[in-house]
Image (cartoon, rainbow, N blue to C red; front, side, top):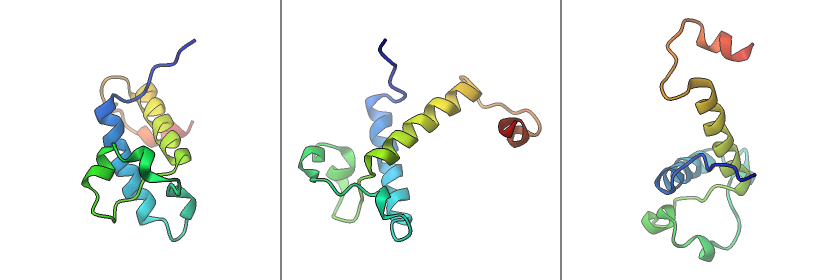
Length: 93
């Protein structure tokens, strides 16, 4: 059974850019968030195209965590944001 991708191609590039910022921001405490693989295979990504050397590529595990977060967020909220009272309390139960 094939699973549906949580992001379109454009959304995936945007999520990678934001995840790269998060990885860079917390890299001193969590160095495993940054991808340390050869960037030649990722040279076609939007993040690598606009980078002047300081943008980071998130690790595979961080990218997968972001994808899972998107799936869970959409499952919880559907097509629009829930605006019910005590949303965090409902989320944790």
